[in-house]
Length: 472
Image 1 (tube, rainbow, N blue to C red):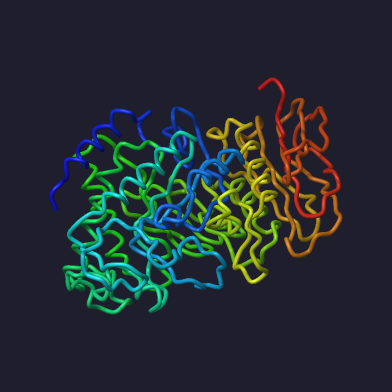
Image 2: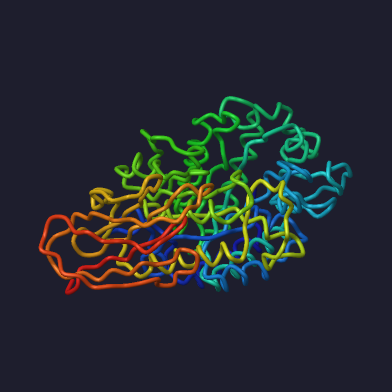
């Protein structure tokens, strides 16, 4: 497909105004990011991925809300996939545009008949209005210091999703997409459909090359519908090959599993491993030796309350994770300020209070020289109350970030009597409330070596500790 003059001009301008090289793994500690010259973790509570493809969603107000809440990441689907109203019992789903309000990379034809209103798509032409909207979204995110995950594909969980895809032959004029939804992603399947997927990938990667605040994710939850690894590797190859002739290289993320999985043979171009519902955060330790960033970029199915999603985020980041994205259903069309009061049947949560606790997590991490730190659970030699777990990051003997948490479903009053393995020295300890980042109490103590004892304040679900050796 030939490049348009608009595309060439747009790419030139974007490249010219790029603030810095794109976000990348930190060269001194690749478990974290380097963004605009600073070590970075990505922490957010974002909408359900429809900010661009849903024409009714006011993404400017949404981005303003994220920035005001001190959050720095969001995830967006490009439009190769969308959902019907009511999918997964989600009320006011941003991935489910109303009839005629869906926009995607492919242009509409002059033939009526798209399943959700309007004309069918022409998979050989690009929709410049879509790309203008995408560029505007990314530029506004950039202005606010927000990094955007560009998610290229998603499996079709059921026939209802496949019935809405422009890649389904019923929705395009090209006779492409004649296979079943289970066969939509395959290197040895329908060649024309694979060609469309590769062309879309190349077009998006090329047009967005100048942005420093993006990374690409190959596919959301490929494992749910058994998308072949060969297909994911093919798309990773397309991304990497496309960028070889362009000025910038971007992080490529692969969504590995729900919960946990040990990765044994990552694609050489993939540098971010993302998991969903990664609590407890054991998958970080399972994959830490790969020397890649590890993220938890979707939450849910643990009720609508804040406690689980706060604890999941704090536990994951202090276990050595680099990214946490709570799926926040308080963002909806007409509620881009995060004010939607969703029903109890919603498959997740999200509130202003939860966003405050995640801002506190971000600020807590920024208070450390965290690229010098690594998961160090053996700092705690004992003293955890029954039912309490710990995540520990440390630069041993210098700075320690400790998070204690209980079962989100079973709050109870308790104190920890920590036994810590520390070198001799004078220490400063500050206990922090994860709800808001406020210091509950702080103290100084001298330690002569071996094991130190430190009592926590009373807490019901979770508490954090900032522990430093003075003079370091």
